[in-house]
Image (tube, rainbow, N blue to C red; front, side, top):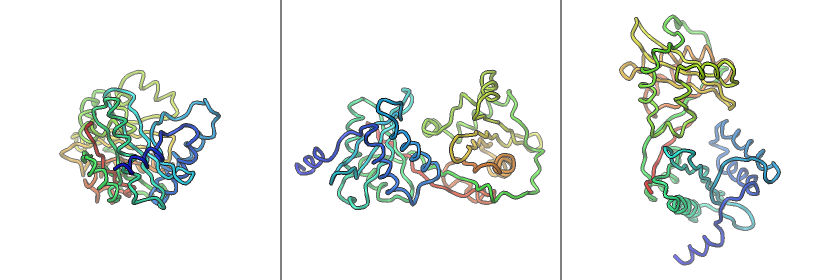
Length: 310
């Protein structure tokens, strides 16, 4: 125990910005290059750009810890602190250089982060781990994290879009009076326990003047659609333009008719918006996978969302 504590005092220290930015970005690339999605590469590009800014320039709001050994950073953990009291801190980018693994570095970094967050009286901390990263999953389970959700990100490839016999007569723009139903079904697919950590702002979905004005003038608009069959609502879908690799689709199907809603909404959104850029959907893992595949989406990754009460 004493040796472990001495190692921690010698090698573990707080993340320093912007001094550590380039080294941390290099470490993340070494550790995750084989599994990183395009958004991850964009994040690294931005991180390196932040690191190149002069000291004192605005940069990312980031906290965390690193592990130094042999004159370089070989372990990293970052913490995204919440901006509101309704959200929780999130542990991200836990990375250990392949040559330094199986020595307990990831565990030390995570325990340090937990202790740090406890000192600030946060009620809980969250993290996400890839479902296929069994080593990391076992570590977090041993530290007391519990699985709260499992979500798959589905993505299209614009080059694979082809014409279908789909009829667009069952799709039209959403109307203002439909918002209460739209909101109810959104909350069913994106409950509070996951919505807070997605790039999802329900307030922007509301049919009000300021949102309509922002939609007309903004560079990143949202467009809402309603799907129905013989006057029965099948579901809603929002297309959201982004500055990243893919635009978002936020699907809110009728819980009693989810397969029918997906079969109507997914092909129509691909043909309407999917030729320009890839489209990305976050959806509960293991639910209607065959339908997504049949509609031209492929699974990019499945993340397990885990929580540790503090």
